[in-house]
Length: 410
Image (cartoon, one colour):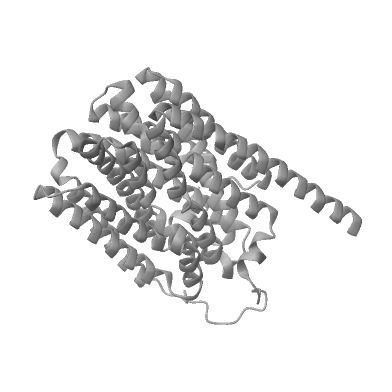
């Protein structure tokens, strides 16, 4: 046990701080999303605005993700992590001030979500690729898996605590997230105690001289990861922003039960990510990634049909299990199958595909406004399942061509 993979990973310098930053970022993101969604719907009663608010949290990833990933390959990632913490603190303090003074408006919350999304766009490609730098190659699987487990713990606790805060201490909700982000800032500053060269200054002959994106995109599995990520972020994840609307219009539950309902998805993510952390078999990784996406979309479809709280709770939990396989292997496949000097770029392009979520938010928001929230979710999930089948057929075709070429070469 003394020399186990977990022990060596856990005691690697910089890992605890990196994991802490990720867990706090995840907790606060899902905490603030639910708080903002409830307040926006109470003020406007608009499903479209609720969806747009969720989309704005990831919009900067779409606009800047690829660029920040390239920057992460050439700068010390610790500076970027510190910068992201400062951005997070600023957005949360603005939110607290407006809520406490009773001045909060819908457009305030939309701007706060956009600023917070900028912080995540800086943090996401930097921290994940930083973990890949400090860990030896054989420990990357477990390191990324444990990082996602902590992030999923935040995904579970964030909505649960948000539900309680909405019921009892709504005006102080953003103050809690600001305090946690300050702790995250301290963790990022502690990373500067690490000794070593964290800047790629030397020219690497293996690094492509042409278009880096095209070089990475030629890898069939990486290409599949990007395309499936786009599908889930356009037709899958935006539907979860409608859960507060469903809770009020269909399930008729209070904010505390709403927090537990949204947290059920995070609980599924947490349990699933612990179960799959450290899996090194590449076939299993690919299977968990694809099947996880299918399970998530299927559960979202069934959730749109349910009118019973307990069934809805279980469906979101199993949907969370699907997300755990999808999101864990999404990062593991990207980091593990990319050469070290291109990991920041690879994560940057991945974050750009995650940033397509605002397009899905518009799609879901408009559909839910025209039809009904539960019908809009149903339509979106079916569209996502259809696109998944199409992408898998295309991926299988390219895989068969690659295998034939290998046989011909041999």
